[in-house]
Structures are given as structure tokens and as C-alpha cells.
Length: 248
Image (cartoon, rainbow, N blue to C red; front, top):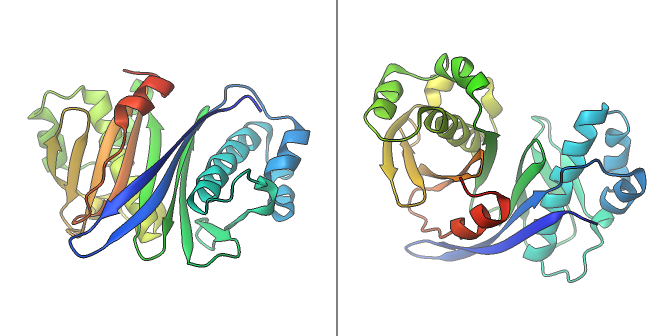
């Protein structure tokens, strides 16, 4: 299967504890064949897949492939039988891992165009991830959803405007995945009140959810955000992800 795959085990370091998570990035520019779908999707997922329109089929399989690689690596399953792993949809369309295991495991998934990303993590330590393309066509839509203080915060930085807007969006969407609200909640609830610009990332915090922060970074023409508990230390090999999936 000619799909680019990057796996990285993440250490989630807390003041009084330590957890692990498994990050997965995948890229594939051409459609999946039906035979490949049979090797990736659980029989329950196949029923949903067959109802999708053509374009959505590709993103669905790519997202599931990426998620299952993360789950397999987290559980150290060796050569994975991906079709034996079932990622069900919850009542709010959130992914739910249906896999016999020794500990409760969750998954967060994102996909955009030909790129997908996922993180498998223990239920005891929440995480969320989102990936979006930096696209001038989205500027007006995002601008209509951000607050005046957020607009001023962007203006006070040297960040490229379209990239900064996309960063705000992905930060909020990754937070909504932790909260399992999706973006059905009014977006000002997720207002960002601080940005800390690092060498290869931007760390944001929230006005109404002080217990969380997001780490955002660019990979080519895409912006990725990972949201995690504020007191968790996390290191991601951003340069390697940028090398494999397109440095800006």
C-alpha cells in the first residue's frame, strides 16, 4: 500500500504522573481501491463506507487507516490486521475505539484533502487534534467567527495572517474534540486569550477553559493543532513532520 506513514510515540509528562500516546500522520494523493478498503475497514465500517459519496470515501478510509496505525502502534500489536480494529461513530460523530484491550483507549482523528492525522491515547489523559489547509478562500468565514480581542492578538504578532487565522480555527476545533461538543457550541466560548510564539510552534490558551492549551505548527500548506491539559509537557518532532509532509 503506497501511503506515506509517520508514527511517533508521545510522552505525556505530568507533575505527578506519566502517560504515553501514539501520533500518526498519513498522506495519500490517489483513491483507494475497493480491495484495499476490505483490508482496512472493519465489517461495521464497510457498511457506512459504501453509503458515502466518492470524495468522502477517500477521506474516510485515509482517516481510519491513520487512526488504526496509531491504535496498533499504541498497543504494540506488531503487523496490524487493520480490518480487525473497529472505530465506531459515537452519538456526536466522535470516534470510539471498539477493541479488546487492557486499558480504556481513545482516538482523535482529523483529515483534510490527502493528509490525515490521529492520536491514540489513554482515557485518563484527554487529547484532541485538528488539521486544516491554509487557504485564502476561508479567510472571510473564519474572520466572521473570531472575536475582536483575537483579531487584535493576531495583529500584534508577525504571523502570516491566513496561517494565524487557520491556527485559531484548528486550536478551537481540537479543543472541541476533547470536550466532545464539536463546533455546535458558539465559537466565542472557545475564545483564545493568549498566544506564545515558539521557534517552530505557537502555544495558545483559552479564556473559558484554563485547564487546556494547544500546540499548533505548520506542515507545508496545512496547520495542525494538538490540544492537551495545560500542565502536561509534550514534545513532538515537528521538524520531521514538516520534512515528510512539506516544509513551509
